[in-house]
Image 1 (cartoon, each protein chain N blue to C red):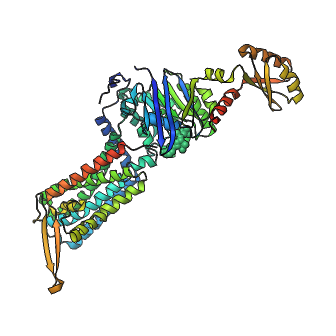
Image 2 (image 1 turned 90 degrees about the horizontal axis):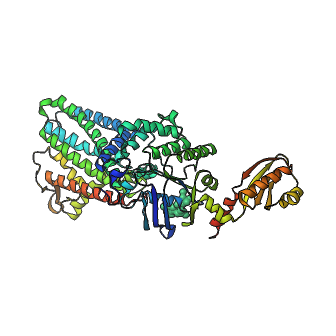
Image 3 (image 1 turned 180 degrees about the horizontal axis):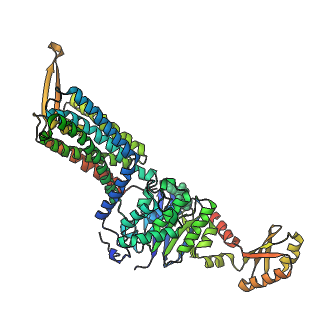
Amino acid sequence: MATATTDPADLRLHVPPSMQQVTKLARYQLREYVRSRRFIALTLIVLAIGVILTALVAHFRGTIVSTNLAFYGSFWGGGVGVVIVLAAVFFGGDAIAGEFQNKTGYFLMGLPVRRSTVYVGKFIAAFLASLSMMLLFLAILVGNGVYYFGSNVLPWQLGLSLLIAIVYLSAVLGATFLFSSLFKTSAYGFVLTAILFLFGFTILEDVITDLVKIEPWMIISYASSTIGSVFSPTVSWGLTGTVTRVTTGMGRFMVTTTTYTAGVAEGIVIMIAYLIVTAAAGLGLFEREEFA
Amino acid sequence: MPTASIETHDLTKAFGRFTALDGLNLTISGTKCVGFLGPNGAGKTTTLKLLTDMIFPTRGGCSINGISVQEHRKWALADAGVLIESPEIYPSLTPNEALEMVADLRGVPVAERRDRIRTVLAEVKMSEWADMKFGRMSKGMKQRINIAAALVHDPAVLLLDEPSTGLDPRGMAEVRSIVRELKKSQRLIFMSSHILSEVVDVCDEVALIDKGKLLFYDTLDNVIARFSGSHASVDVALARPIGPDVVTQKIANLPGVAGVNQLDPKRLRVRFTGGLDGQERLLEALVELHIGVLSVAESESALEEIYLSQISRGD
Ligand SMILES: Nc1ncnc2c1ncn2[C@@H]1O[C@H](COP(=O)(O)OP(=O)(O)O)[C@@H](O)[C@H]1O
Ligand SMILES: [Mg+2]
C-alpha cells in the first residue's frame, strides 16, 4: 500500500510490510499467551481431561474400545470439541475486548500498524495457542491408542479428523473474535462463546431437527460432528448428509425419530463458511471500532 | 527527510449530540514544542485520538508529516511517537522486551535496536529497571516507559497527551524535565496539558482550546504581548514582612508601577509598564527601598489571567 502523498521510502525508518507485522505481532502475542496463567491453567485442564479419559478407556476396554476406530471416534471425536471451545474461550474470549478494557490497545494503536494487522496477528496467536492444547490432547489419546492397539494401527481417519478439527477451531475462534470485538467488556466474549459452543448450538440443532424438521445444516455443531463421524464406517463423504429414521412405540404411540448426520465435505464447507463470515464481520467491526 | 508537521482541517468530533471538538484548524510545522492547553474536558484527548486514528472524525480530517491519518494510519504514524491515555503494557513484559517489540514492529534495524533502547531508557531515566516486569511498576515508571516507547524509533513528531497527569509531584517534575530534554533533539513536540505553568515551563508555542474550540495558537511571547498589553508583572519575595502603608505609599508610587498586590506579608506582585527597561528601573528602585528584597521572579500571573479570562468567556 503505497501512498500518493509520501513514498514510505522517504521515511527515516522503514516500517515493515503489513504481512511481516502480522507475523511479528502474532509471535509477541503468542509469547504473551504462553507466559500467561491461563496457558498453565488450560494445560492442567487438558491434562486432567486426558487422565479422566485414560481411566475411562481402561474401564471400557473390550467394549467401546474394541477397535481403534471406535476408540478414536468416541474419545477423540467426543473430547476434542470441548478442548477447542475451552481454548477459544481462554485465548480468544477477550483478545479484542481486553485491549479496550486493559488499555493495552492504546499501546498497539500508537504504532504504525493497520487495524487488520492487529486483528489478524492476535487471531493467529490465539489459533496457535489453541492448537497446542489440541495437540496435547491428541498426544494423550494417541498414547492410549498405541498402548492398546499398537503403533502400526493409527487409522488414516485420525489425520482427516485432525484437519477437520483444525477447521472447526478456526471457525470457533472466528466467532469468538467477533464476539470479542462486538463487546468492549471481556466477560461477554467468554460467556457467549462458552454458552453457544458448549451447548447452545447443540440445543438449536435439536430444535431445528425436531421442531422445524429439516436438516440443521446451518448450525456449526452439526458440521463439527464430522470430527467424530469420520471414524464411522457408514459416514457420508460428500456434500450431503445422511438421514436415519427410527420408529418406536406401538399403535397410536408410534414415534419416528429422525437423525441427520452431516457429510464430511458438507461439514467442512459449513465450518469454512462460518470462519469466513465471522472473520469478515469481526474484522469489519474492528476496522470501525473507536478507542474512545 | 520530510519536514515534521501536524495539520488538522475542520477537525470535528461529536459523541452523540455533544460536540467534543468543533472545527479545529491547526497547522504546525518545524521543530519546536507546542503546548495544547485547555481545562479538563476541553477536547485535548479527543484531538490527539483523532490525530492517531484511535477515533474517527465526524467531519474534517488531519495529517501527520503530510500523510492523511484517516486514509493511511500506518504511514501517518510511521515517523511519529505517541503517548495517549497512559496505555498499559502487558504486565508480563519488561521494558527491554516492550521496547524491543515496538522497535521490531516499527522496523528499527536490528543492528541499531540495542543502542536505541539503551539510549531511550537512559533518556527517561529507567536504565536501572530495564528488566523489571510492568506488573510490578509504579504509575510514574510505566509512564516513563511509555515515553521511551514513543521515542524508540527517534520520530520526527511526538504527540504527548498530558504526560505528567496522574503522577505524584515528583513524577510530574521528572516527566517535565524529560520533555524539556527532548526539545534539544530536532523534533516537533505536540503536548497537551491543562496546567498553564507546565506549558510555560516546557513549550515555545501554545494553542489554547476550550469547549472544543481553538481560541488561539501563537508563540508564548506573542500571547503575553497580545493579551497583557503594556503591562508585565513580577513576584517579589521579601526577607521581612512589610506593612500595607509601605506598599501603598512607597512601592505603588515608584515610577512605572501600575499596581501592587500584597499576596502575603512577605510577598508582592508588582505590575509595571515600560518593558525590559521598566523592569530594570523597577528592580533598582525596589532594592533602594531597603525593604529586604530576597528575590524577584517574572510572575506567571499575566498568562494565568489570560488563561482564566479566555476559558471562562464562554460561560
Ligand atoms: N467516548 C466519549 N463519549 C462521550 N463523550 C466523550 C467521550 N470522550 C470524551 N467525551 C467528552 O468530550 C469532551 C472532551 O473530552 P476530552 O477530549 O477527553 O477532554 P480533555 O482531554 O481536554 O480533558 C468531554 O466533555 C468529554 O466528556
Ligand atoms: Mg484528556
